Length: 328
Image (cartoon, rainbow, N blue to C red):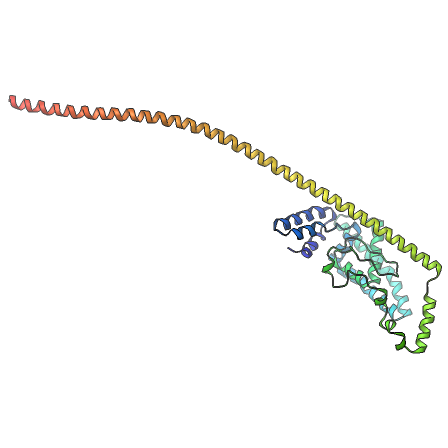
């Protein structure tokens, strides 16, 4: 048993089944003597409803996830190459692809008896948007082990901290956000001295044109604050769900322990009664044995006496026979 295998199993389950199954797996690991694995299994967070739905789509219809991620990769590539025509065309496709993916998620969830609310659907679409703009978020979505939804403001790297159940199961480096510098095309990361003067001048002009206005900075700040509040709400919800799950597991363990204690007490009382009954039977048998031994001794004395009398009578018979012969 290892953490990754257990995570794969747990995150395939319905949300309503997750907590109990996690407790069972943690108990099994503890029984096998692996306390550290038991602790890590017990700390696996229950996925939000939206994250669970995305995981189900990734497992049951990975081609739908691939369609979203491939379009995102094409958009990133067109942006790096400053291909305006491709950006316009791909941008038109994006809404259709996202809507189709969200419909598929809702359909898959409903197939398992889980209704995806409109709010959850918005979170799912936001997760797909994040996966489109961020390669690390794409890997996280494809993993099928999301525990919370993702979001992006289109500027900063997607926050992947505590987003995946077992981050080490993803390719190395995915769990850490990629820096803005790493996201730039290779040509943009070259030193200024290596560029042509004309190119440098054009770049400076372009950078100045791209510099955000006060309104854009304010909108970005507001988006960041909303994203932060959303993360805090999700973390608080996850903490509450985890606490509820732990409480449920503790209650289940208590009920199991009480049941075992009741069963043990019942068996103890039953055995005590059987021992008392056997003691009574033993006492009666001992009395019967004593009486039988007494009878046996009396019978033995009677047999000995009868034997002596028989010998004596045989002698009397022999003497009588001899006297009779003499008289003839």
